[in-house]
Structures are given as C-alpha cells and as structure tokens.
Length: 266
Image (tube, rainbow, N blue to C red; front, side, top):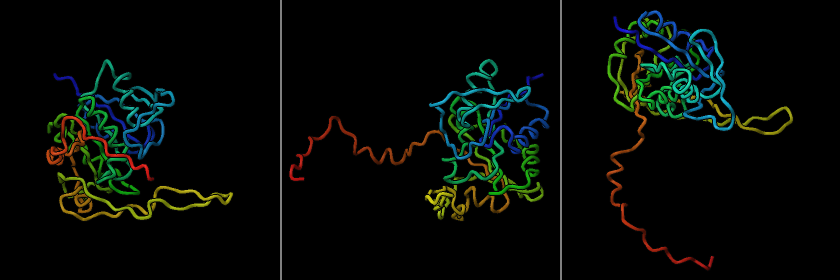
C-alpha cells in the first residue's frame, strides 16, 4: 500500500485563523494525506514575499504536527522546509484558506500567495486558496469544494516554477457553478490612502481605502468568481517578460559609449 502523501499547510492570517482550520479539516476528511501545519504566529496579510532579517524567528508548538513561526508567511515556509520538516519534506504545500480574495495585481502583495510561492521555489507543487469575498462569512462551500475536487487538482502536474492560485466564491456549495481556468484580472483602487488625525491632532495616513473595483474582462479570475465559479490561475515565479526581452536585443552591445561632456554651466 502506498504511503500517504505529506502536505504542509500554511497561511498568512495566522495559526489560529478560521480559514486554515477549514483547509486542514477538508484535507483530513479525505483520509489519504499526512498533514503538518506551520503558520505565522499572528496576522501577516499583505506581507508579500518578505523575509524577516532584523529579528530572531522562533517556533512555537501548537499541538502534534502544528507549529507557529514568529515571522512572515515566507519565513514560515522557509523554516518549515529547512528545520521542522528537513528530515520529512512535504509532497505538497498549501496556503490558505485566506480570509478574502487574492486576484489580479493583489497576488503581488499577498502573503497567502507568497507562502505557496516559497514552496514552489523549493521545487514542491504548491497551491494558494482564498475565499473570494472581502468580508467572508461562509467557508462551507470552500470546504466541500476541496473535498470533492482537491484530488483531481493535485493529480494535474504543475510545471516547475509554477503554482496554482485558487479563488473560491463565498457561500454554500450549491452556489458554486463550477470551475474556470483563468488569467489574472486587473483592479482599480480608489482612495487607497486616507487622511486621519490622531487624538493629539496630528495628521497621519492609513492604507486601505474603499476597496477595489475590477475591470470585468472575460477569462479573468475576477469574472469567474463574480459569475459563481472557482477560479484556477497558474502563476509563475519567473517574472521575465520574454517577448520584451527579445524586442530589447537592440540595446545589447560590447563596451559602453563614450561619456557625454559635463555641463559646467549648471
């Protein structure tokens, strides 16, 4: 009998977040995986792919096979791979379920996506899961979707350097119309930075604004979720724009041009 596959589960909302518990429960209910949970000790949303370089990291046990790391999502997966699971590496890395969407340009800021990307950089097939509502209320559909569809998703091989970003509509399973394979959408933020005044009358700024509006382009993650579908978007760690790389070949040269004369009149 084959050994059960080993899954590392992480997130950016913290070890005690509801979403990571739902993901863990959904995977356990399938009965064919071993699970290790390693998540940030506290909330780390929008931390992107940052590493902690100015303070120590600590591992805090939260019961058998569950660990918190006092750092970012990237720190957490790095510590899990290099320390916690060094002798027992995972077959998959899963991040989520995030409390909110990770679509369009937001994947650049996302700690959820960053945790999965760190797994990808270790050569492990990695997946980011998000409940695509700004104020999610019902994870039941996401849990049931994972129970029904996760084995098929994991069976599809990811290319090296690629991760899968999954956005699931909020609400019960009956409201999910199916699955769409999508590209990243494009969002427009309004009033991203708001002006505030502290109790001493001193002004300060708060990043948050009114939330994004989205371009309603067909084939995007946003359009799929808006229409009630789960969005599967393959992402690449390699950010190279290969088309433009070829177009810019005319700028290549051996040596550099002579320095222009200095303007001493300035």
